[in-house]
Image 1 (cartoon, rainbow, N blue to C red):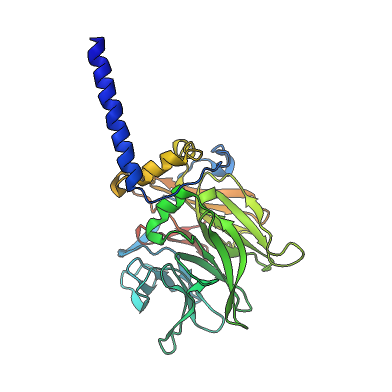
Image 2: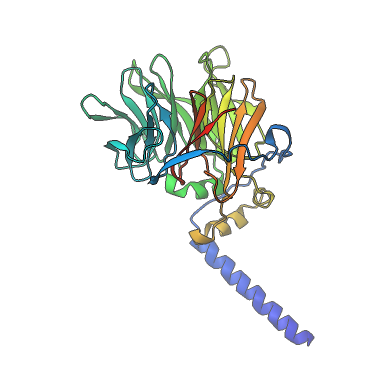
Length: 358
């Protein structure tokens, strides 16, 4: 009996070694060891709630409207997974197609000169002129290296465009692999109207994602998705360009950040909540490489959990709105406030939604 058990154990061990070897060879990622910030307690502003369950949700034929921009007339702008930039009326399922970038438009904002500035993950920083329909590429790379994953933007009153380059290693199609690797190649850059050139603002981020300006434009808030944290980057004074931790140890992956209007602070879209078993692998790059070799259907799946949080101007979490469930509008990639509503966008979910702020 003991001999039989030993043979079975030996066969299983050999099978595991062979499987591990296959996964290792199939994996193209190169993970680094890192130490995640502590998991916060789910109390206070992090406590579970169901406040975001009553939402309005429409245009469900549109896939992946990651970032929503609200125009002065109340119309909405969104970039879709199929490359189209569309204009929508609230509650309407019939979009007006403005332009097709033939890439993956993520963030869209209106520039003081009237053009629409588009962060296209594949094409770079673009400017579309609604007057004549022309498209200009403002920047397709920096320092002689083409962009791989331009992500989010915010525009200052003087026309300076601050934008994030999420990763110098991976494209948007490999964002899961980028999180598994945890290389810190993400950057924040700016396009200066006077020179029409790009300059570095700060670097060293693991997946630099959302970016927002403070009300007085004295600092930026940047979401580092791979590090579960928000950074503050002063734009004036002796500390200009020096990163400062704004809020550490977030309970979920932060995505886009937008300045709040009815409250002092910033709306942070939170994606999938953190999982202790995933954080436990941070110090074991070999195991994460094996995970990277799994077929995509077998990769770890994000939970359906809608979550938006308000962070005040000092970096303190104040309140959050959540809805956990398969029917939730999640993952939320962006929450843009306008006229007492939060307009919600998602990089994966269908349609556009909005939530009435209390």
